[in-house]
Length: 541
Image 1: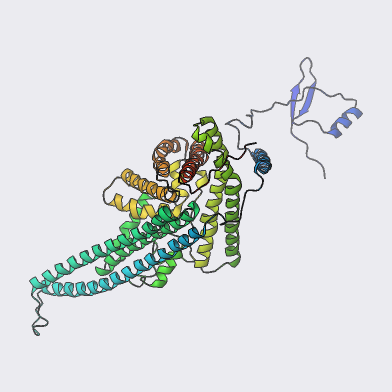
Image 2: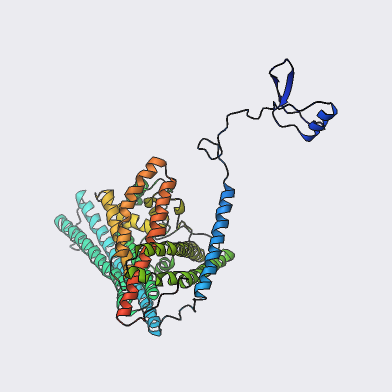
């Protein structure tokens, strides 16, 4: 097989008429040997600059792979973390202890009591809806009878078969209005009863966390459980209230199609359009304890009579997610005890002395640990735990999060990272306000205010510090959203500048600074009241 010769160009050497054929590529070793045998000398006229070409790092250069830089960055990150591990061990030794060993027996008992009483409110929610369902069945039957009589009277039909069947048209209309008034009154009464019950769901763990339980992490578990059930039961009562009204008045499904149009109009561009989902179970057949129990444990905050369901239980998938959740929890505990706690303890004196340089250094040092803990927390709950629950319950819709790490603005991040909460706010606060005539800006303001209050409850109550740091941290996301939204319009949805602002403001400066402030005030308060012994700063070197 013969080699194909490369293309050649002919150039005329200056100073003579000798034409030399120059290859577009350097001569091979065989060519050099052949030239020597033919007594031909090499000419330095070989063309090496033959086309326009930008530098690989220039903007106009074609796409290039930067995998080598990524590998270098990973090696540097790995080496730096190994150095920090060695440094941490040399300074502090092994600081971790058996999980739960620092929690008092009283806190264990009170925490268990706080968790056990929350299901009682869930049962109350179910029982209230059972009573409302029975009233709805009676109202539907009565309304159908009166509507039939009114329709007969309007068509001139006269009932003359006895006093029992005779109905005066005015009396029929009066009974009809009376029934409708009773329906509205019943709906309002059960609405208020549901409201009082869901408030009690959150009030009980809040009271226990602030007044009875000392350890912050034990309190947080109570409040997280209470908050989740508070949102779930709110959705359960609101959804069934609308389903109940549709059942009483025998409204066809087409009457609710405007809801789908509103959802489509309010959907963001990064959420793919979904087909209309028809419920497989209709009211009142969904008011069963089995249905309530399924929703109680389902990885969603929004109630539906039915959900998309998977058909196969994958045992290996389930066990992997459980193993990942347990592993990540262990890693989080290790990072908190071995790395975060010493950094926080060494920050108390700097805050006391208002040494801002030292405080900034502590915040930046803490940011490395806090980002890792936060990422592990995200993976533990939003991926491993939720997917394990979904697999166990055959729950089909597993869009618990989208690609929030690529968010080009703070607003996009909040819409992508915690989808269950985002969808709850959109379904039960944003869209009802907008369809009632409120502006989208006002609806967003209400949502962020409510979210800020919930963050203050979840952080301020367990630490016994209602100082507003968590509220401010959440509430001031609004100006950050206003700041980064124009960047998306200017540089596109995947803007790197907006993504950097998100990472710096939220995970590098925001979370560590908030953690430092809460730890400082919690430590000082409990040292002053004698419930905590003063902790000497751990040597920095």
